[in-house]
Amino acid sequence: MRTYQAKDLKKFCTNILLKMNVPKEDAAVTAEALVQANLEGVDSHGISRLSIYSERVMEGRINPNPRMEIKQKSHSVLVVNGDNGLGQAVAYHSLKKGIKLAKDSGICAIGINNSNHFGTASYYCQLACKENLGMIGFTNSPPGIAPWGGKKAFFGTNPIAFGFPRKDQPPVVIDLSTSIVARGKIILAAKQGEAIPDGWAMDENGEETNDPVKALKGAVLPLGGAKGSALALAVEILTGVLSGAAFGPHIQNIYDDQADAPANVGHFFILIDIEKFMPYEQFEHYLSMLLDEMKHIATVPGVEEIRYPGERRAREYSIKKEQGIALSSQVEQELSSLANELDVIFPTSNQQNEFA
Image 1 (cartoon, rainbow, N blue to C red):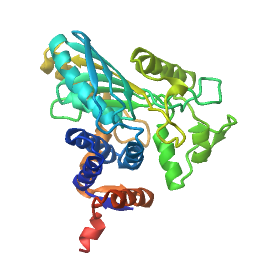
Image 2 (image 1 turned 135 degrees about the vertical axis):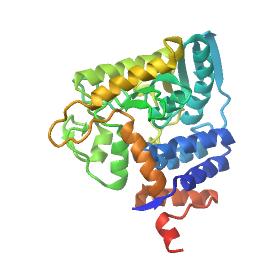
Image 3 (image 1 turned 45 degrees about the vertical axis):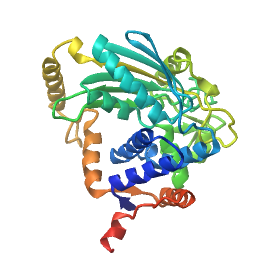
């Protein structure tokens, strides 16, 4: 696969979105969130999503220039109507307001409805960490997981994410779906014609499958069996019911060509001002002690190092920032077609640059 510089892909994403009348700040945030996912090794939520976002904007199924309603219900509660905007932009503007409230009151809860797929939840945790805030984030998504014992997808894969800041070190970022694997990885495998591992999904008949196409017609298996199914329900209550968004099978799938209504995805964020609990230096000291002690536990055979969540992400970022982001031929073709359609220049790869 050919590689591309992150700055070039970010500029390309931004230009594509600007062509579709997405405001400059919203385009930049969405581009940054997508490319950062690639830099951190989460390609399923990276620039490969730009094509479907763009298609839905051009069809009118996503609003490129929403008039968001951010209502402050109390000194520490926000309820947001995203007006069917790009999920990244809706989440970003909600967090900007929420961060101010959290620094004032110590904590802020944000319920968001009428949004769309927002990429990786970890991106928003890192935004909070840059402000020395802790964060817990949730989002629902179109049906992907069957209730425990069922064979039909009902809950979304419903990620849960945590972010905790560190001084001069990568933040602790925990980002996991309540399914055994993010559904985006199965979508990417189907797009690239690759088989999926055992234990990831079942087909429409409730039988486990390695075929990503059959898996997308069936259901992803929950994380930890019944426990993952229960967690998916909890996320659905927070992001769908409490936030006033769609829930379960009522969320429209961005990949469903037959859908004729807004996705109405819901998000729920909890922001925590560490300084309201203890001096930040004290928190940093205790957190460093915890992580250092954890990392010095004796390892099992074959494991050289214990890493905390967020370390791998930061290392991948550093490597790919330098070496570039690899794109499959399928993703290259989709983005090149999009570039031609909107008259935007698609960047040259690193390999092409070498021989220029």
